[in-house]
Length: 611
Image (cartoon, rainbow, N blue to C red; front, side):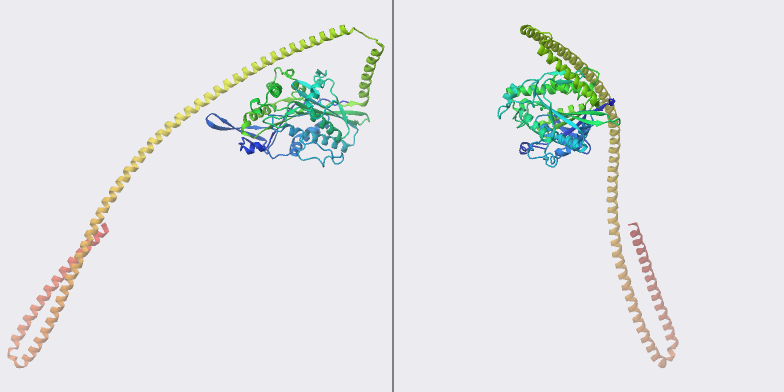
C-alpha cells in the first residue's frame, strides 16, 4: 500500500530568535538596536542613516522569540510541530542561520552531557538549556515508546569544512588535543546523485540507535570532533557546518492486515556563522576558514534569492552546502529556519543582513510529500535483490569471472575517468555559473527597472505633494495677510477705545469737580437759609415782645387815656400793617431762596445723571 504524494505547497517556516546581551556587551554599555514583539511576531531594528537620523525597520516572521525566551519555549512553540511531522512520515529540515556569536550552536545543541540520565527518566533530567537536537531526540523516543510500535532509528553526523565532508561518527583514534590532526587524516566523502533528484554522501556511516543514551553518546562523540576556535566575537566559534540526520522507520498494519513501513527523516543543521574578518580578528588559517564559510553562506543567499525570484537557474551546485540543503530549499522537505541575531549596536549591519535573508526565505515554497509507505514484502524483495547483487559481485571476484585489466591499464582508465568527470564537473560548474550570472544580471536588471519605476512613482508623488504644499502655502499666506489686517484693525480699535476712555475720564473728573462745587454752594445756601431763619425767629421774638409791651402799655393807657383810644387804635393798625409788610417781604425773600435752592439741587442731580 502506498500513500499518494501531497501536492500542496508550503512556505518555508522562519523563526527569529534574538539573544540577550552578553557580559562583555553589558560591561561596555553597548546600546541595543533590536526590539522584539513576540506576540505580534515582529522584530524591528533601529538603523542610523545620514545625519545621525534613526530609522526603524520592521520585519514579520512566523514566530519571534526575544531575549527572555527559553530553550523550552523555542522547542515547544516552533520545533515540536516539525518533529511531529517527521513521525507522520515527512522529511523535515531545521537549520540555524545567523552571524557568528548569535547563539546558533546553543539553539541547536545547547547542553547535552547527561551521563547520569537513564532512559526512563530522560525527559525529567533534561537541563533547561538543552537545545533543539537533544529535545527532538527525547521527543522521538518518547513518542515511539508511547506508541509501542516496532521501529528502528538510525542517525548520521557529518561536518562540512572548507568544502570537504567528514564523517563525525566514523571510528578514529581521536585523543585530546588532536581534533584537527585526526580530521585531517579522516577520509573525505564525496557527494553523488541518489537517482531521485537528491544527493547522498558516499560512504557516510549510518548508526542504529535503540535509546536516547546511545544517540547522545554519538552526538557527544561527533561534537567533540567538530572544528571550533576562539575569535574576538565568539570564544567557541564553529568553523564548519554540521548536519545531524535521524531516520525513523516504524512498522504499521493496514486494515487488510498487511505490514507496511513508514519512514520519516529529520535533518538538523548547525551552520557556521557569517564572519567579518576585520572584527573577528581571524588571521591565516582562521581567515581562510572564515572566507570559505562566508563563500558557502553567500551561495546559500543566492539560492534563496533565485528561489524567491522564481523561473531562473538556482545555483545549488556552486557549493556543497547548498547541494546538501537542496531538498530543504525548494524541494520535497518541510523546512524550518531559525534565524539568530544579536541585539548589540556593533552588530547592526550583520543583524540587518540576517533579517533580510530570513525575511526573503519566508517566500520560498516547498512541495512536501509524505514518504511512500513500503510493504514488508516489497522491502524484503528490495533487500533480497541487493543481497543477490552483492553476492554476484563477490562470486565474480572470487572466481575471477568477469572483465579484468592490468593494474596499469586500470589505473590509466581510472585516472582518465576521474579527469573526464572533473572536466565535466568544471564545465557543468562553468555553465551553471554563467547561467547564474545571467540570471543574476537579469534579476539585477529587473530590480533596477522596478527601482526606476518606483523612483518615477515616488517623484510624481513628491511633485504632487509639492503642488499641494504650494497651494497650501498660498492659502496660508492669504489667511496670514487677512489675520494681519484684522490685527491692525483690532489695534486701531484698541487705540480708539483707550482715547475714548481717556476723554471719558477727563469729563468724569470735570463733572466731579462741578459736583463738588455745587455741593459747596448748596452747603453755603443752606447756611444762609439757616441764618435767615434765625433772623426771622429773632424778629418774631422781638415783635412778640414789643406786642406784649405795647398791649400792656395800651391796657395801662386804656384805662387812663380813653380819650386817646381812637388815636391809639389807628396807631395800632398802622403798626400792624407795618409788621405785615415786613413779614411779607421776609416771606418773599425766603421763597426766592427756596426756589434758588431747588434749581441748584436740580442742576446737581442732572450733572450726576450725566456722569
